[in-house]
Image (cartoon, rainbow, N blue to C red):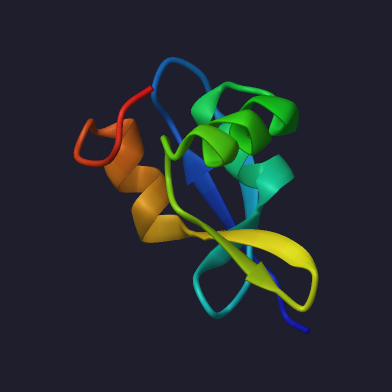
Length: 77
């Protein structure tokens, strides 16, 4: 499966691996948000943060949801 790399440049450069479908796994979403994967798992349990999707037993996030959360346009912790 082809992977696409996306660079974010807020305060520092962060490399994120994104699938062609526009989804990122929990580890890459956490890296983009400056949090840990465990924090995103806890946010999902509490119903806050970008909305996770379970696809064949793995957790993914739509990149647009992660970006919206970074801009404050999504559910906030």
